[in-house]
Length: 549
Image (cartoon, rainbow, N blue to C red):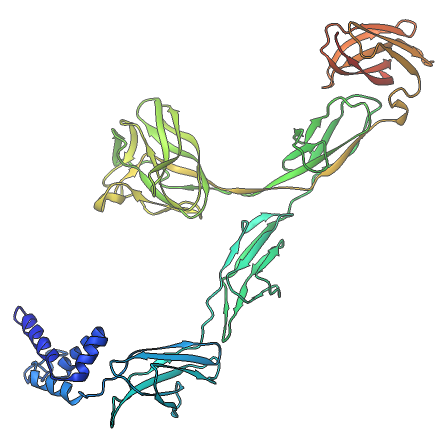
């Protein structure tokens, strides 16, 4: 009541004025403890009112005399030590310390919690004592009293020394929990002394196998186990491919089977030189090795979210002031959404990070009149709060309104939830803005296999200048290059064909009596190949250089 508060405050002030030296010592040394002591004396002095029992759980009348008498009965001229603390000093020792307004000496006693026999240190001069020989991993209680001539303060409340508790270790990773075969992740424990589920005892372990991994932190008195970490290693699938035999210099068509094939001209490193299950090599003059890999994508499941269609309760909206909100628990892609437009034209759409009001992705999309699906391909980068909105002033897109009762919250696959709108108050979930039937896709993991060798081989008799010989001059050539074939005994017209470095045929000339002259004046400087054939069969091949003076 309005009277009770000032009355109680006055009583408390009166209790503080009690002529008790030990109370004033406590007020000076430990104000909060003294306040609790006075409050308890106030409560203990309350008299029960006869007409209140049974009507109230507690109740009564303050009796200042009762409370003062309790304080004076408890009063002494020997102040009790205060602020006692105990700190472990290794596994079997502890430092017990306290404060006092007196000069001592002091008696200290201690015992294991739950036992009846005290061990004591009498006549301690300092306000602290180190106790040795404690049982490791055992809880102890400590007390202290002051000695004042012929009287003592009495032992104060117990201070507990609890055995050390090992904190639960955490595991950190330097890679994702899901990765491809051939990769690895390092797991690191926060504990000082470790025992991994693999049996290893180091601070970190390297993992390259699918499995569940935990670590125990080994403490002095107990063991704490970490949360489990599940590692998934995705196995790649090797492509299958066959070697190719060419009758002579030329290009080869290489084929391989798999989900997504890449071709390389080196066994390790480098960049792909081709892609696809079928790939044509450059012009080859000698036996050559290539390599192919297969990439398999894991995950990337597609699902749909939000209201599937618009409601009859709503309108084509004339502003973009509000929009739809969602939360993400992991990264994913918003592939497309369904919209209903009143009039064809461009509409700007943005993905907003609601935690910092920044655009994550944006685009302007030309929409037809009526219902259509918009290909957004907006990547949600990770966990957080987001919005999908129109950024124009008059979008003229359909928005479900009051009475449509949208079914919030809408799950977004397993990686998020459409929660409501930016409308404030009770109507936050009464509207549904613009974007229906979300097509969303989880991020997939692409695993590229090891490289499989494919060899394009040619008969050894067709190596450069083998078998029939040809004299090529001048080399390097400027305006013309001359070919003089000898040692060829075949029947049929012989032709010489010139190829550039990419394998493109640049010139063809028939040979007369084993000789031919090819004009090179119009060819760019560089290395060229030649191939002599008869009736489509290769005779010999080689290279020469064009260099204009």
